[in-house]
Image (cartoon, rainbow, N blue to C red; front, side):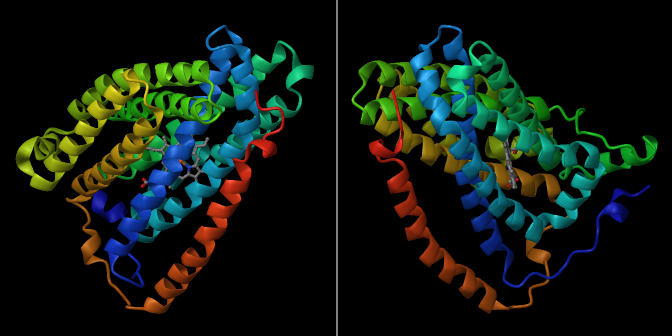
Length: 350
Ligand code: HEM
């Protein structure tokens, strides 16, 4: 059977595809940074219950995590919408093929979220059970991340979709893809680094040198590990795509080099314990990596699809409306964040 027959017919889009590509990558960067902080803080907080960094830090993080996870979820909606506009025929199909697992994400997300709330609100009453509850929430978040990695890689492999017929309609994952494990681990190890950076920044602004040092230690160690995982991810890519990143495509190779330079800078800033520099470099590196990842998607889909072939209806009024609300909404968000991070609004922050 020809896999192209399984790819749904494309729908026209209102404005040229590159608008959506830019918005997709930009919102993905924000979503993934928040996801990193949510998962990383949960792991660091859990480690605190077993002696690493002390349980005072766990208590502080317990107050932050529900809000951060809520923001992660909300900030995931935007890239989901932009992804569906341009790549819907691939993403919807992979979502349907892994439907059972995919629908379960909603329930798990709610459970993980409530778990973090209970962990915060009943912190003292829970006693020893608090680490079990946090572990459960963390495992659910890790599983959800794994489902996202499965979905966004399954959408790139229409040839794999044929398995649906062998499995007689059962939902399946993209487990035989050699790039899946390193790709997923790359995101999760990054979470330990960014979670550590979040702790270090909290320490920096509270003038707490011990906390800054503890956070930077997580950041530097996880970044070191992630350089190895990132190399594994690169090597696991299909050979024709790997060669594009190795000089075959100038843009792809330049982006990868920029991302690698960023990673080396991160390590340096981590070892030198410079949280502000590390934060700036982290955002820059994640932007480069996200653009590289977007290019990777285009390479995978090249035999099947080119986003510039999408029919465009030229309805710019929707774009104007979107940009208007973005311009009005962003200052409101900045204002809310400023209120949220005021020390007096973080009750009992240790
Ligand atoms: C605990 C919650 C979550 C975790 C741990 C998580 C984790 C991840 C990870 C690891 C990826 C990258 C996958 C890859 O490229 O291999 C990802 C991508 C993505 N996530 Fe999340 N996510 C969470 C919640 C959400 C929610 C609730 C939404 C939507 C409402 C969302 C929307 C997205 C989208 C659209 C992408 C792919 C964007 C693209 O491919 O350009 N995420 N997420």
